[in-house]
Length: 548
Image (cartoon, rainbow, N blue to C red):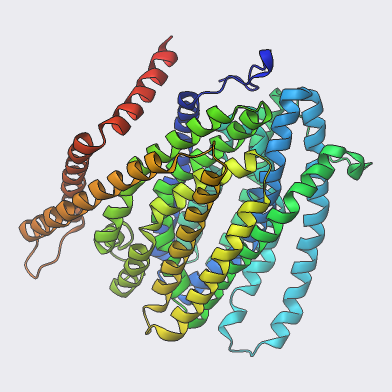
């Protein structure tokens, strides 16, 4: 795949199958990172379970992630990638790379100041809290991990450049480093520091900071081969019209994403206030959901943003519509069975993955995490479809519409979150928080789809809705079959007393997954043959061109 699209004749020769080929690359690389992310949470579950210390770590880590979402993968990246892609098409590589240097320089200046201020504020904050407050636990970790915000935001911006240049593999592999360093630290430090959990978690916090630096350094060689030189330049920053344009574009998105990410933090804070084990349980469930979501939903969004940007720059609205509709159909076929399976098999999945003999993840931890997973499961389909719709607006450099929609969802989410914490009984409050996230995302997605439909050329609602509905119905049939097969397997393989060995759990789950896939595939072949034929045809074309 060429780094910059051919623009002869004033048109970018993009195609939906080409997008699917790029998605395949991103999905494969992201899968490696997501699997490692799951492995790291398995290690965290083994050493920390759903302890208050684990929840405090998750609480501290969400703060630098807020900045990553806002300045890295969020508002700045969403505003930067379309302008950078347009500069590549219209002005050439050298001009686009000089523009990128200015954006990175401004980002470093702003986040360095914010990081220093944030670290300094943790000490007076600690002085305001009682000496036995659970809220003191995250502060030492937060002081160490706050600089990670600066590093990961720079790394995310570098990834955006690589994606726009067509270098999807390197950008997708970058998160691999965080997970690898995280896992190695857990496996080495925790056994050496056995019996010292406070010290273990501090060592892990320092490892997170090192991983941020590694993610920046990892991407520089690939960018250097594209002509990029990493240097900071603060002269005449705001005189660059493209930089001013990025700031103008990101302003409304920064408002929306910033409020949404603050809401994410509030979710964690509310969960920690309701139950010290709740943030950890939510994190374990989220990690399982993020595995297929990252492999496919995030992969589609990663590829679609620069694709829509280039198509919009050349005025190719017909190709934008074809690309979007194909992406939605493909995502529905992939994600609907994942959602259904995790919904009905939440507890077996959680127990199989996290409940390891000798670890701190016990039956109580499994039940809490399974409840959260069941609540998050429908969100797999919802989150992924939303990720396909949002890049259309970003590609059109319309960041205001997603912000307005997000604010409506935010009000709903906050209302439901607070109601859940107040009304639901102990052990279920975090379930309400997870379900609120899914419901608010559903509202966002429906509103985005309706607004695109009103634009006329960008979405044919009937055909897309029909494809999604068929996938959901087939997935529901698969879920019933999978639940029945698992019950039979459990009865056949159960030991005396009704329990299963870890090996028996694996066999039962493997048989259940195979049966579920067979039922889903047969149902889809009967009622959604066109969608299956479309996906198979795209994959075959990709393989044929690879072999050519």
